[in-house]
Image 1 (spheres, rainbow, N blue to C red):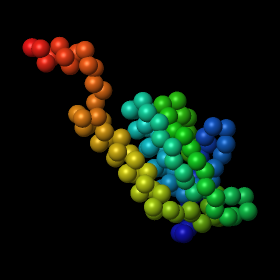
Image 2: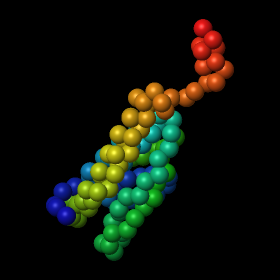
Image 3: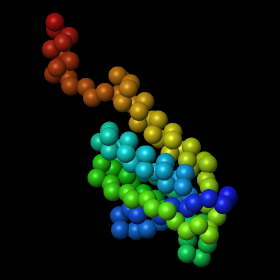
Length: 117
């Protein structure tokens, strides 16, 4: 843990306190999921009221509304590099699927029409 800014994440009527890098990655994942009209289920670490670290599970989809705001300065930032790496991998996975022609939607009737040409 390093002394840096924590972030409040407001989602589905709840407020979570997590690290800056985690919050930023979460917002990016929500954005990419929305762009691809898809959803992503993700677990992130969060700071509990007593100072312990807990877990939150979020389901991000096209209609997700996430707001992050600066958290307290007197709390050590919650750093979880494996979680940020997992979120980055999920973001990359959305982009890879979108760019992979094998993953594109197939329309059998149209495909047959092209095959007949």
